[in-house]
Image 1 (tube, rainbow, N blue to C red):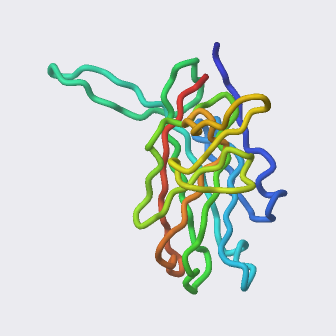
Image 2 (tube, one colour):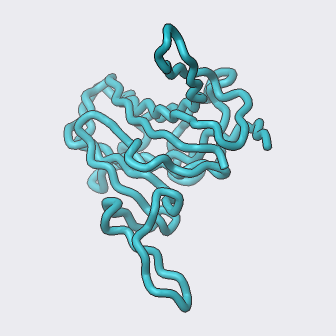
Image 3 (tube, rainbow, N blue to C red):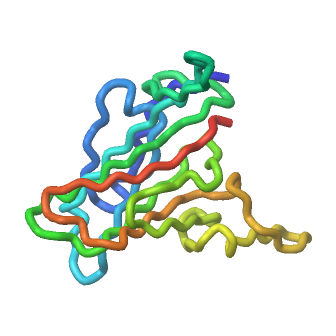
Length: 181
């Protein structure tokens, strides 16, 4: 099954930040991005989030398997995607330890242990972004069944908590992988 859709959904309406439009193919398969940067002051207007989805293509070159990234114009079931989020502080002052929350796109499943970012603490949600915890603490409760440990396919959101401040007019990058259902 092939999905070809641009999903720059309601993120700006959810928290009131301006998301810049992606260019061309890179806007494909993007989902809701939330950026929370502290309760003491509203700094969400100082943060711009740009998400780029690319398809990971594996080929063999000189007898070795090599991975390359290509724009996610069209993806098919089973394709492995790499999402890169650019977190840009547009203000001239430092934002102390921002937090970025990303809703996993529809028709994708998170690839376990793939969320990374320099000097970040990564946690996940299995309840639509209402609560977050590390993977080994997430439990799924289903009616009539005993609780079970959540798997990567149960995740609905990823949260990166940057351990350091984001200096004025600077950028941080976070990344994860997902597989198209």
